[in-house]
Image 1 (cartoon, rainbow, N blue to C red):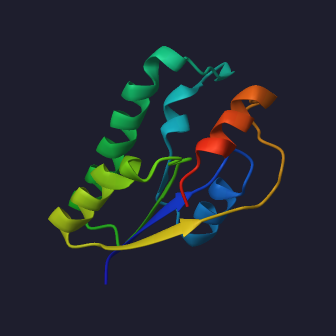
Image 2: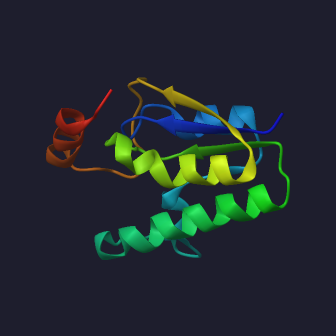
Amino acid sequence: MKVIYLIRGLPGSGKSTLALSITDYRYEADDYFETANGYQYDRSKIADAHEHCQEKVKWAMESGIATIAVSNTFCKKWELNPYWTLAHDYGYQVIEVVVKGNFKSIHNIPDEVMERMRLGFEN
């Protein structure tokens, strides 16, 4: 059986840690911002980051990887749609996981941004 885990949660909730405990094939939009000089977030490139993540997942599915995890905030449920479509197209079962840990975010997200995300998170 082929499975894709869609792991949702606020920054610092434990998404990446959970994904890494499930599979070596873990993808995140944040990976797009990792450079030789460290994490370089650029809000103007967030759409590119998500497209890159989706392309990586598509590659993994085309390669027949049995277990895939995508760990993004996915604050809005519609943000899951591209992965549901890929899962359908490539015959993957979807397991959606919401994590609610309260750890420190590794990306130093400003408090006001975290609060906005917390208020807008759809369960």
